Each structure stands twice: as C-alpha cells, then as structure tokens.
Image (tube, rainbow, N blue to C red; front, side, top):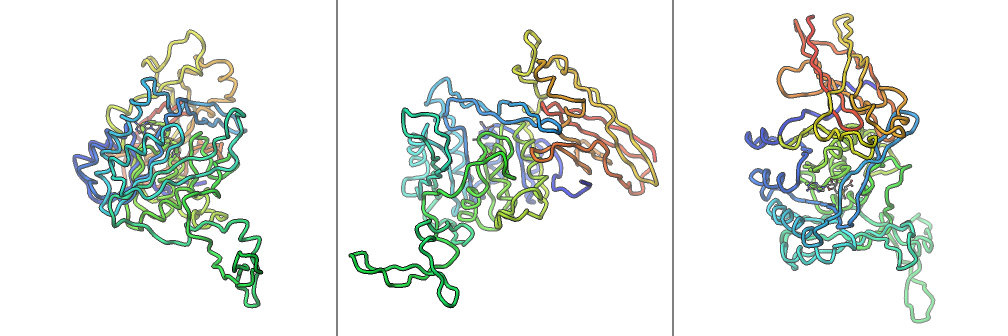
Length: 475
Ligand SMILES: C[S@@+](CC[C@H](N)C(=O)[O-])C[C@H]1O[C@@H](n2cnc3c(N)ncnc32)[C@H](O)[C@@H]1O
C-alpha cells in the first residue's frame, strides 16, 4: 500500500514547545508522560475546556500487565511488560496516586463536563469515596456495571468475577447527556423472542395485566432498542480474532467507549484520557469526530496508538460495526516530555543470563543502511540492512523467533524534505497485529523545485530502539 501523505500523523515534538507557544489552533494530541506532569503542564491552556474525561487507570490489581510484540510473518510474538500495577507500598500509595491526578482533572472539566472512572473490585469502593469527596456526591450519576459474560472461571473458591465498574460524575447540575439511538441497548432476549410483526410490518409484543388474565394488549416497540440501563451486558471483552485487537492485555472494547462518548460529549467537545493504554478512547473519539487528547507514560503505548490511528481503515465502523471504517485519521501530533524521551531498553527477560542490561546505557546504535534511488526526478528510499547491536545478547529462545534482520523492524517513516528539527513524515509503513509484513522500499517521492534534499529516515524496532539517519542528496 502506498502510504504517501495519506495518513493523519503530523509531527513529533516536545510538549514544552507547545506549552510555551500556547498554540490555540486545535490539533489532536498524543502525549507521552506521567499523567500528573502532563495534567499540570496543560492546565493553563485547557482549564474548564474539556467536556469528557474517561480514565482506565491501573486497578490496584497487584499484578503486572503485558502486551504482545508481533514479529514478522508468519505469526510470531514476544510478551512484554506494559505496566506494573503492584503497589508495594499498599493501598494508600495507590489512592494517593489517583487522588492527585483526579484533583487536577476536575479543573479541566467544562461546566457541562463529566468524568468516567473505570475500575474493578480491587479498589473501586475506596475510589468511590475519593470521587464523592472531589466531585460531590450530588454529582454522582451512575455506577455502570460492565458485565463481560465469558469471564474465564479460574477458581471455584468464590464466585467468578465478571464485571468492571465505571463511575460517572458530572461537574455540575447541567451537563451534556445525549439521547442518541446509536447508544441504545438491544432488547432483552425475553422481549425479542416474544416479538411479533403486524400487517404493516411494525413489531409488538403482547402485554397487559399480570394478574392471571390473558396478555392481550399489543405493545408496539421501536426497533432501535432501549435507552441504556446502568448494567451493560452485551459488550464482549476483546478477543484476538477481532479487528480491534491490539495485543494489549487490558485493552477495553471500542463499543464501550462509543456509548460513553456519544452520551457525554457533542461534536465540538474535547475528550481526554490520561491513561490511554492501547488508545481505545481516542480511537473512538477520532471515529466520532471529537477533538481528543491522549496521554500514557509508556512509550510503547504511544507507538501502539500511533499505529492504531494510522490504520483506522482496517477497523470497524463505530456506528455500523459490521462495516469497515472508511476514513483515515485526522492529523494528530505526538509530544514528549524532554526528560522522558530516552532510548528504550531491552527487557532483561529477553536477554542471556549474565549479559549486561542495555537499559544501563551501554547499547550501541543499530546499524542502518539505506539506498536512495533516483528516476525521472523522483526519489525512493530502500532499506538495505538494519542491524541492532543487541541481537547477540538475546536469549537463544528469543533469537530463534527472528528469521532475518527485517523482523526487527516495526515501523519506518521517511521525511523526504526535512528542513528543520521537526520531523514530519511523508511516507510510513509499519506492522500491526493483523498486518505482519513491512515494506522496505518507500514509494516514489517527487520533490518540488529543489536543488538538494535532506532525507530523514527513522526506524523503530520491535523493542523500541529508534534509529535515524539523514541522507543529503543533490538533485
Ligand atoms: C488499564 S491500562 C489502559 C487501557 C486502555 N483503556 C485501553 O483500552 O487500552 C492503564 C494504562 O495506564 C498507564 N499508566 C500507568 N501509570 C501512568 C501514569 N502515571 N501516567 C500515565 N499513564 C500511566 C499504563 O502505561 C497503561 O497503559
């Protein structure tokens, strides 16, 4: 597929540049950083401007959570840590972490805004008390129970846990809450099984008195379903065979976010998620045409989300699930805190015993070789070799997963005319869970009235090491 200028990704920059310039023109933003730092930095610009915040933070599960790194074609993968949810200092430290962030989030909410906080049995009861204190119990609107029916039964010592709680608070009395048929729930099986059609094609069921008399009254229904109750039972958990699957273990379903976003935001609303993981909330916000801000501390999350947004055409249409979404993402910008954008490490679980951990800074830059072809005033870049210095340090079991140097490459982006320190790609290709192969020859780029070009090539490998090369050519 020719990915020239088709995609919405604009540029990468540091968040400080954005804050200093206080740019008001809207651009969707994906920010890598600790949510508290990001919140504090953006407060000046977005105080009372955000209509909807959804967060799905760590749950105090006292577990590690993983995602899959997909390697080449045919299917091979490695399991990598996405985030720690261990909290060795106990519940207090978890509640303190969350409270500090919720406290600032409240200031972001517009007078008509709302917040949804997604949790489960581990800490939801404690967090509810924090939320009551912060947002006022008079603004508590719902505890939504998302019941996922196919929960795997790992215990017979207690009842199988099969739901999450989502607390919904509004900022005040007068808040956005839409009645939209797209957020309706299906009728229960009991109703649908009892449905009959009349001679004009309208559906009805037999209703009437329950005191032993015959149910004779025709109760007509509209086919769009019922206005949602606070127990959501029809949204399944993510499975690997679905289009939305990103290989991120705590990924939430797009249809869950669809209902929340349609109910609690309007077309011109700004939506924010400060723990966005694999980017479900912002993907749905994008498909529904909302403005969005996403933040995650993990650099890999940002990469997963970037790729998810850039391949939206291979996802479900959020308003008509059985169809493909046929649009590309609008432009978005990726921002980093200066102190956070550092070279990625290879996790020790993938390394040979006794090898030093490259995270300590000893990792050499990978070797990248490219060839630039010129034909009929057009230019093409060909990746000829990519040789990461860490391959010999990998465990044999891990090394055996790789068939060639190509398998290490996850993402290629090329800025054919890179004038400044701002990288703005013209051509991109990458792997996704559903598209495992990567193209090593770029499309042909046509320069406009130039004598020379600075071509910048960036490679991101599957462990997160980034290499770039600037190639100057005369035309
Ligand atoms: C439960 S996951 C979110 C999953 C997401 N809703 C989805 O559908 O993919 C929680 C996320 O919070 C992120 N996180 C943890 N601590 C953070 C912090 N201090 N600041 C920002 N993000 C953080 C983790 O990296 C993880 O991606």
